[in-house]
Structures are given as structure tokens and as C-alpha cells.
Image (cartoon, rainbow, N blue to C red; front, side, top):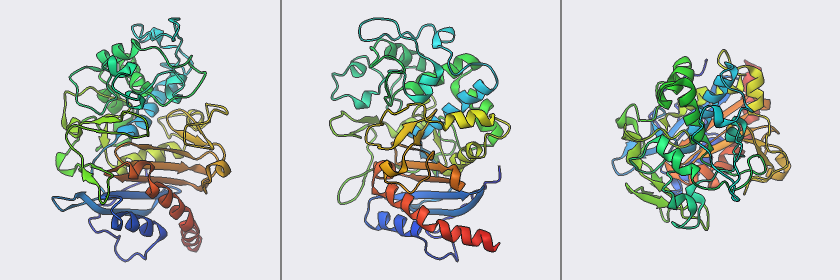
Amino acid sequence: MPIQTPILEADHPPALPQTPIDAALDAALIEQRLVGAVVLVAQHGQLVYVRAAGFADREAQRRMRTDALFRLASISKPFVSTAAMILVGQGRIGLDDTLGRWLPEFQPRLADGAPARITVRQLLSHTAGLGYRFFEADEQGPLALAGVSDGMDSTPITLTENLRRIATVSLQYEPGASWGYSLATDVLGALIERICEMPLGAALQQLLAGPLDLRDTAFVAVDASRLATPYVSESPQPRRMRELDVVPAFEGTVGIRYAPSRALDANAFASGGAGMTGSAGDFLRLLELLRQGGGELLPAALVDEMGRNQTGELELPNSPGFGFGLGFSVLRDPIAAASPESAGTWRWGGAYGHSWWVDRAQGLSVVAFTNTLYEGMSGRFVTDLRDAVYAHLPAWKNVEQAA
């Protein structure tokens, strides 16, 4: 992989003029919508923008660096989804195989008690009928009553026990009939464990992190001194996240249960959907692997399948114009989405304050890791950054042509 991320402590790369991306990032920091961020942009395999800005820890006055580590939340999903696709490429499992062969104990049922048939593809595309506890209205929801963990809280249970609890709750719909963001990637992680006959962290190291030289990516932070402190969006400025914090992500929901210390807890179960830690540079390497067609790890046809809309005309909530592929959303209609991105662009984020996208038509991979939720995941900064990147595209093309 050609991507190498230099370590920058300064708020601006030296001797580079101000860009629209700088302006978007500066505005978010000055207006105290973000505490700190790392933004990386690669085009056609070359880094064209690198910046670490603001604070990794505001109270300690520790400045953000490009090698900062972050709690990844749903940024974990593309790693685990790619690992599963590598197993598909190796012929060890099929996309349309049912889970029964590998996880016979995992047998959730439909609302009427009838047995359900869940496939690997449905786990990857979030069409399996599963849910998330944090979407429930209160603590009397079925997942809450079953004691299910969403993978970001502090709990002594194992992954096996969490799957047992998930399976006691009726599916929200027949698999394949609808779309719902869910704990499916946690189930996928358990499937990877069973196929590889090793813990999920070791399996990901063998399948993906080792071959890609991802030295920062793990289920426990590899260097606590580099871990960014999380903050919660509030007015007039973000507040430091408490050790046990519940923060609603959507109106009318009970919210996500956060335990920041989980990132340092070697005994916490490996949540494939939300439990990893890592750096922006490592994640960019993953995106570039996929954008470039999978290299030696994954057949190009399977990368194309990951980036193909698997959900037909189903609308994703609050995401007009988007469908879902195998591990991330796929832009079906840029006009409906009011987006300058190309049709087919991949995109998703992470609840701790992250966003990313890959526009293969433009050769773009963009990573924005912040330590401020939910501004960095779904706030104004995400849209401002997107528009700034596309506003600056002509300048990068002019430099490329001149070279």
C-alpha cells in the first residue's frame, strides 16, 4: 500500500495555502462544534491533504496528532465486514450460506415464533431483522430487557453470552424483507471466530491487520497515551464524556450507553460492530485497499459486490438517495441526496464522532476522525467537509496535470 501518514503536530501542514477543507475544519473548531480532528484525503492513491487540528485532550491541552488513536464505534464494521469477505474469497463461507452450519445455537425467531433463515449477506447488509438496543424508546424495550450490549458499554458478559441474549428477542422483520441498522456485525464477528477457530481479534490480525500492516487497529488501544479523549456535543461547548454516559443519537430513542474505559479493557468482549480502536491512517489504508480493488487479499469482484446496493429501492432512514452494500452505505441517487459525490460512493461513520467516504469515480478516499459526538458523525461538519473536498478537486487536478 502506498499510503503513508506523516505525524503532524501543527494545526496546519507547513508552507501550504489555506484550502476549503481548512476553512471547514477551522470553522468547526472556532465555533466549538469540534474539540479535535484528524482529516486525511487521498486521491488516486496519493495523500493530497493531511491535517491534525484542535485538541486530543482539551483539559490537558494535549494537541491532536495524526497518529492519535480513537474509539472507532461503527468504524469497526468495515474492518469486520472486509475480514468476512476475505473468508468468502477464500471459499471458506458463501455470501448466501445460512448461519446454521456455523452458529447452530443462534436461532432468533420471527414475531410469530416461526424460525428464521439468516444469511451472511443479510448480516453484511443489515437486512437480517436484528436491531440495536440504543434505538429503543426506553429501558423497557425487548433488547434492554434481555440485557443485550451494543458493544460500547461496560459489561462482564462474553460475546457468546451477548449472542444468546440477542437470539431471545424476536426479529423485527423477516430477513431480507427490510433494512435496519443493527447488531448484525457483532453476529458476523462471532461467525468469523467460529470459522477461524480463534478469538475475533486474532482472526482479524491474521486475515487483515497483519497483511495490511495495520499497527494501530485492535480491540484494545495499543498505546493509551495516544488515545483521544471523547467529548459530547453541547452548548456552548462540547463536554468531556463521563465514564458511564448515555447519549441519545436520535430523537425518541433511549440513547447509546458509553463506557470510554472499554477501549483499555482487555476483558471486554470483542464487539465486531463497535468495539475497536485505531488511527485515521490505518483506516485510510483499509479504504484504499478496497478502492483499489482488494489487492492480493480480496478478489476485485467481491469488492465490487461490497459496493453494490444490496437493498433495492428501500430507503435508509434520514438518508435519501442511499442504499446499503456489504458493510457500508452506497449512494444510489446524488440528486435525491443533494450531494456532489458520484453515484456509487461508499459512506458511513462512527458514533464517537467519525465519518468517511470513498468515491471510486473520482479516485477519492476521505477519512475524518474527530473526538466529538455527534457533530463528527452526523453534524454540520460532515456536510461542510464533503462540500469542501469537492470544491477543492479542481485544484488537485491542476497540480496533477502540471506534474
